[in-house]
Length: 86
Image (cartoon, rainbow, N blue to C red):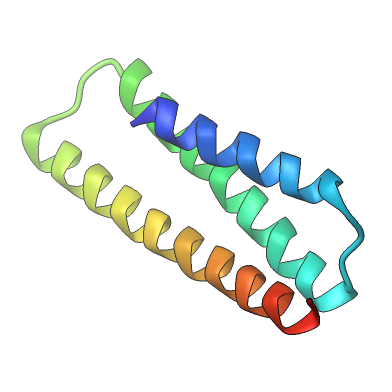
């Protein structure tokens, strides 16, 4: 899971420096990158946490799923905005 989050972050960084985007599209890209960093941090907290109950882990994994969905929606908005200017 952590490797996937790092791959997403690296892809977003590459996209950020690939070309110039208009302001609205750049906002979506920045939001996606910030969300991917937060997801990586949350995954790190799960791995380095001293002790989590099964209930705690269930909540943490659910929150990560929600965060990934949010990241996907933000990235989709970036892509759709980018497609309109091509």
